Image (cartoon, rainbow, N blue to C red; front, side, top):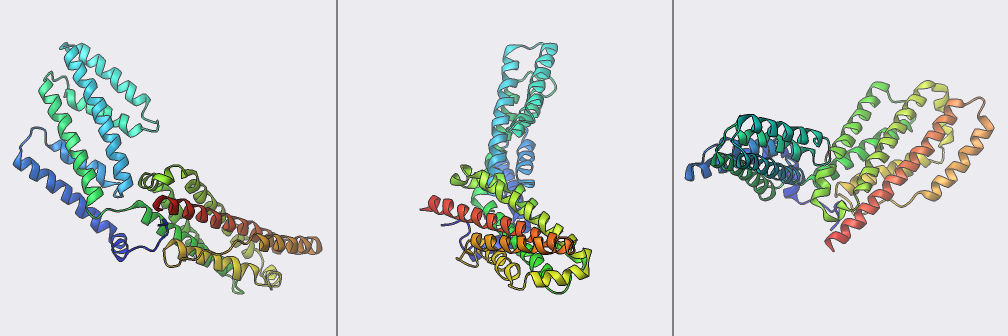
Length: 358
């Protein structure tokens, strides 16, 4: 099944109420933790609740919670093992302080690496377990255990209870981006010039959707085994949308330059190349990504080649007088190339995710 397959009503319901469900899941995880503590009281239990909140608060999706839980477990184990080793090695307060600073220095040095969060957790776990120089081996083990318990609870609740899949939000953000770019595209090719302020608002909404896709990248990759080996495709899809968005903004600026050149633009596109084919393709891609259609638009390579030939003739004939119109025509061609590239990337993602479920 493709990542762009039609979503179930349940998945749509979860996405539409994602904030409420997120709050419910955090409260449920905390409730489970407190029930466990009520049944089996343990010291330093507050760290279980702190761990749950840290893991689940900002990353509600399964992939994000999985990544953060794994890194937190690794960091907790590293920090706790180092702290316990210090306690087993010496009871001298000054030596404990020196070894602690060396450990913090090592985690700080690695804090900007790929596993930076794990090293961050290792650092404050080290401090927390030692508790300002506490020499109790038993207390160190209890603190480590309560943190690990919080990781397990957060991970299980994220995976089992109304799981919030990052891939669903990612695909709907992609669909929203393509839909709005299609509207901007068709608006600029209509006889009525769109007001700059209204267009800028639409451009901003597209930018937010693209940024959200980028933020979801790690979570999406963690949820799909096959996409872990094709994460570069997701990166390139974001880059292609950004390039297309930039071209649309340039198109808007070119169009606003002169009402006279706008009349020439209408003549240039009398065949309806941009308005019908490419504008319709963006809407079709949006419908496909949202799961409302099973059909992808066809390749427009031949159409782009013929259009390039047409505008080259136009540029030769009228370049000295209709500079704005010619610039607009060339930007349309470049935007068309990016739209074709987005189409091919979505086809590739569809193909590899189909193989994953086969």
